[in-house]
Amino acid sequence: MIKDGFLWVIRLLVGGLFIFSGLIKVNDPVGTSIKLEEYFDVFSNDIAGFFYYLKPFALEFAVILVVIEVVLGVMLILGVKSRFTVWALALMILFFTFLTFFSAYFNKVTDCGCFGDAIKLTPWQSFYKDLILLVLIAILFLFQLDLPKKSALWAKVVTAVCCVLALTLSILAIRNLPFIDFRAYKVGVNIPQNMLPSSPLEYSYVMKKDGELLTFDQYPSDETLEFVEMNLKNPEALPKISDFAVWNDEGDFSSEVFTGDKTLILVSSMLKVSDSNLEEIDQLIKDLKGSPIQPVFVAAASQEEITSFMNERGWDILGLQADATVVKTMIRSNPGIMLLKDGQVLAKYHHNNTPSSSEVLDYYIK
Image: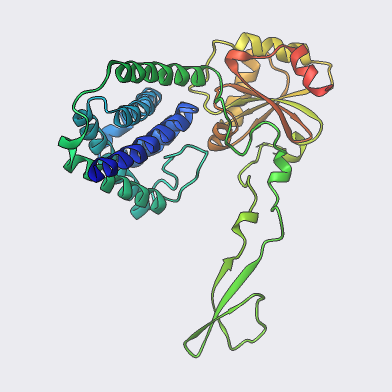
């Protein structure tokens, strides 16, 4: 009885963690695909060149991965095909442990994306988390003969329903936007305010004298002390947004974007930009002309590419450059639409849900 209870607790912990991790990524499969692309880039350079050719399929891999995480977690807890489930989890956690160790030891991918943008872990924290899971799954592997050998029909039905739901939610999140936005540019955020520290940054200074290390809250004036390092005492006060910038050949336009009412048309990749709803965006820009709301095109591209694209679409608006990672963080759509009022995010739209000019105007007159 004690052993059965012990194994049940492990099944609940491991299965629950896989379900939790999978559901967070089901909420944002595009974010998971971006992380996979990072790994494919690193592996193509450090392990084998063929990983580069997997990048175009990163989104498909992401959907498969997140659905499998959820389904295996449900199967483990409900005791559906226990031996198969434990084998599958063992192989998956071995793969994850390799990824997180590779990231931590070689400092290649600084965020594994284990829990999406909801919970940020350092590479070493991710590795230690996977080590703990590896030990727990190893225990299940050793005692797999004591796990449920048969499962009830209802358990199999629940597993199938969870699989369909996870797949459906993933597709909906891809075709729209994440159901819950955990990123720094979510609706309601004031971008320029989040670019500032939440409180004054405090530092400690480590100095050396006669082989002894001394720590000071203020930089000492004693010139006989040798500087060793400076440490931030309140990292929680750091700006939540540190990488936002938009510019063109005339200079930086970040302050301009944070002034007044702006509708940003965001493109993270000119090569992958979807043209399925560009006509609706064309109409939106046309209808906003003459209104107090200024449309601005922001793309991760050269100024020549931006100008050429706008001329092709007939957009007589301000065109600005931005970093691709920043644009991908701002919105999970290519193109996507973000409404700003004095730098505050009022709304975000996937290109499949391009708003009309009247919908946009409603946000600014509320």
